[in-house]
Length: 384
Image (cartoon, rainbow, N blue to C red; front, side, top):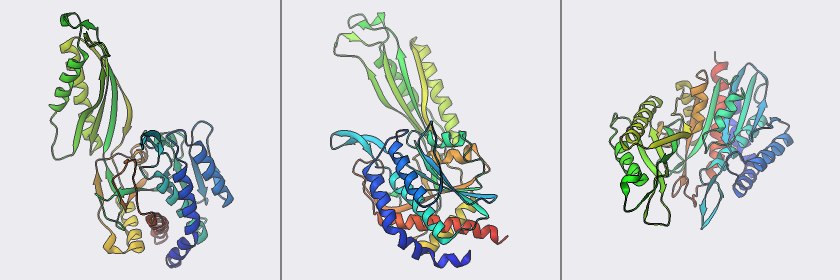
């Protein structure tokens, strides 16, 4: 396997035109979570043309490619869904989080590894995962047992210019945990002159905002809880609204602190409901686990980064308040050794900005790093 290290750049350069075509297609045809039907079909046809075994599903989008048949199984994951957001005054699907690039890098790494002749005594599985943006895609793949044979798993995410410069790469991204709560206040409307006859949902929400802001947890671990949406009342200004709807965004750098934060927010909601004699209910509509990375996987990816761009462009693991459902794979399957590549690519103004742009040359950089990481993983086991 050591001999292929010198061949990787040549192979990656050979497949560059095809990689660019795949990215251009995915970028021009974005589809939102659980609607990635055409994306799934496009990738399936492309990969089958390369002779890969492709698995799709009747009940969800996304696909999995299996190559080789050994006892050791190494996985690569790229996400495929886009965001739904306003672009130039029109709401539409939009790849402003880089999932089109992530899927392309997974595709390119798979093609490169096949051309390099990865050995048959190991198994490679490449996941093209749906619904990352709603935090459900990884869980769906886990429920289908697709991770049950995985030993090592590698992912990738573009990073904004605020986190790292163009050409730099980190062998791990320490994402935080995130939850979204959506709820409702149910009371009685009242005439503007008789506020004693109802419950003012606006006042209820005001007190709840203050209660949440009063939560004090360990300041050494980043966390936040904030109301991000509230609606109550109508066009009749002389009606005190008894009903309202709201959303609350929770963030914590560790899963343990998130448990505490959620408990405190729940206590605040219960207190306000009891104090003002009003019904407040909520559901957790999306949630993301904080990162749990494996030290050996991180070290193998760090070596691959150095091999690709040079040690001077290797930076330590970065800490991000953002969330990623990739980390459910290790939370739900602790035996999986995993990490996620953070790729600097001159991304601006920022992730999820409707006009997000980045240096597309870094897609090829990512392809090479991921391919080298897989090979490094093989080599580490060969050495034993």
